[in-house]
Length: 103
Image 1 (cartoon, helix red, strand yellow):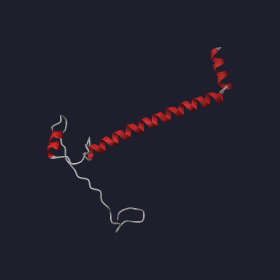
Image 2 (cartoon, one colour):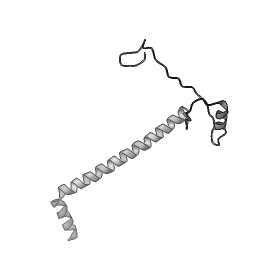
Image 3 (tube, one colour):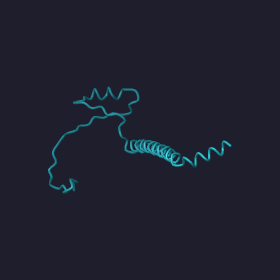
Image 4 (cartoon, helix red, strand yellow):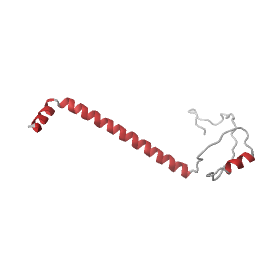
């Protein structure tokens, strides 16, 4: 008897049942897609970091001395450290394509 009432109510309210089912399905589908995207992105980023030996940490400042570099190298867990110089400059647009790409 209860089984018959269940099927009768489902037939009677099929559009509401279908709408709720569809909303639940879409929510689960979007959640699974976002979770898969974030997991895949982190795996790809980790592989990229290992392939190109990218730094785990960047320490930025002005005028690091060799003594400061050696202090950083002595920190437990630091395998290697290096200094670098970044200079802002202007590019002479002698061989730049119209879309901004450098030829």
